[in-house]
Length: 353
Ligand code: NAD
Image 1 (cartoon, rainbow, N blue to C red):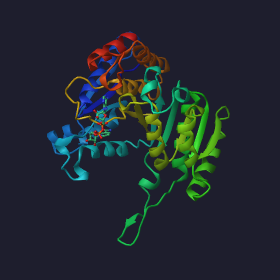
Image 2 (image 1 turned 90 degrees about the vertical axis):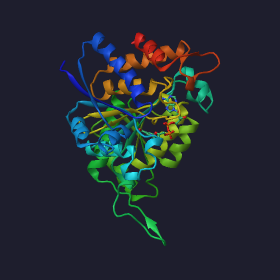
Image 3 (image 1 turned 30 degrees about the horizontal axis):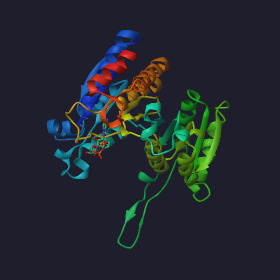
């Protein structure tokens, strides 16, 4: 297999600490599975502001466009909080996503048995939950023009072009074909023309995927069903606005922010993989950050960009086994847990891969 150019953007706060866990995992995979990585380090966020005066430099954007895949830690922190919004570390991530055309955001919600008690829902409702939200990330009401705010009124525009709906629908159907073969498309087609259009295009695309079961749900009902019976879902497909809200509901079903991976993909499945959490300045430098969100993000990279399902599954099972054995970082520990540092938990997981 060809060498994979992998750009590592650690960022700020706990970003470098979780990236260290990812690198140890990649080294293990390299030696066990005969895959070669060329690891390239780049700067983003506060680290880039300190070095170049910008949250992301042209050099980093270039490195990202050349790389086969990108791992991202987290950005931000009190040191840069007083900067204007356009100069803040977080702007670096937004620029990176838009320059790479990462229009598909994939957020799995997986519940490990050991986290059953951490969720706010009853164990019976969420045990064995494993679903995926596919959210359109570069269109819809967040970007639609015209937009305006005056003292007497304000408005935004929710607009989708056919090609935007088609490509995100394909990501959802392709993802479902690697899972349980069900897509539920969420919209508000009883009220919004843009949602009616969304539904029609999704139905058109579904004709290319005869073995995937397609259903539709209004977004208000979807919010309710996620809390009432989340296990009915396999893949949820949604627009930018609805996906933003639904993915946060689904994230909380699983208990801890330190466990949630994500991927943002372009139209060739090139991706940026990152934990959902931020730079956690309150615990940075203490060696206690939970590395699981980052480790599962590496697992997603093997599934969605590198087409190595077996390795992806091995990573997920290694995390599951480690948690079942009672090992945990502080954020997910209960009274019976064997509390580990970031490095210790990483090592135990890697030993199981
Ligand atoms: P956060 O996710 O960094 O932290 C929220 C809380 O969760 C904190 O108490 C933190 O200690 C805890 N936490 C987060 N990840 C954890 C982990 N892996 N293990 C253990 N505990 C964990 O969110 P915040 O505090 O709102 O934001 C902090 C900074 O991060 C801000 O500057 C924010 O803008 C930035 N941020 C960046 C990203 C990103 O880089 N993608 C995302 C969200 C927030």
